[in-house]
Structure formats: C-alpha cells, structure tokens
Image (cartoon, rainbow, N blue to C red; front, side, top):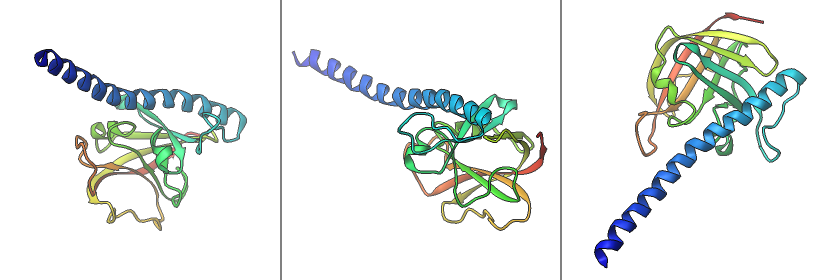
Length: 189
C-alpha cells in the first residue's frame, strides 16, 4: 500500500507545484491582454482607463524591443499589485520622452524576462498613453546593489532605465538589480 501512496503523493505535489508556476505565467499573459485593451482605449479617448474595475493602476506606456519581439504594457506606479501584472513606472521619475530619467521596473521572471536578451545598441521603443512615441538606444548595463543604482534623477539628458532583480535565473530574491540604461534617439509623434 505504501508503495502506491508514495508515487501518488509525489505526483500530486509535483502537479501542484507545476500548476502554481503555470498560474503565475498565465496570469501575467492574461493581464497583458487586458492591459493592451485598456492602453488602446486610453490612446483613443485621451483618458486613463483601468484594465479591470478593481485595478489600482492603469496603463501609461508600451515598451517594445522589436529585434527580439518583446513587448509589455507599463503601469502607473510600482505597488506589489501593479508589478504582479506588468512593468511599473517609478513615480518619482519623469515620463518617457521628458528631460530626466524615466525608470520602469518589473519582475525578472515575467515581464522583464526579455531584458536578458537586450543588447547594447538595441532600439527600445516607448509609446505613451497620449499616443506619443519615443525611441531610445540601449547604451549601458550594470548589476548594482538595490540601494546603489547609480541612477541620477537630476540628469539633464533624456534617458530611460529598465530595472529588474538579478540574477535572472535565481529562485529567491536578493540584493542585486540589473539596470539597463538607454538614451533618447528621437520622437515619432
């Protein structure tokens, strides 16, 4: 009897763990579909649109790295709830396309998983919810301690920073962050 219970118990535990991991990725994918719909409506109406009625955030931009086929909707703020559904815009930073540094942060295992494939020189495109489009060029990356990012909020340039936890394949959180820096190339309207 014990020989039958052990394989069944191990199979059940494995299925639960697999299901839990699959749920996180399914939630992230579905959220991006709903966020894309809200983002398009925001552009069309000129007003922020929540992706679902109980959301504590709304889409403010789309980030794309076409060379690798990556795209994600960026949300207002970086609360734990917002980051569960997409990259967040750090409140104390400027909007993309404005003088200063716009900072977007996301989880390394979902929405910013693609950062591992972004190379220096890649073009990063940002479309804001007001319909304005900006192109940035990735020009530097670094692994930093979470409280020593080197990001200068008082910069006089037009900059973008994408930040996530490091290392990409870690299973637990740690003190290091991966920071990708980019400089504005131009606007597309």
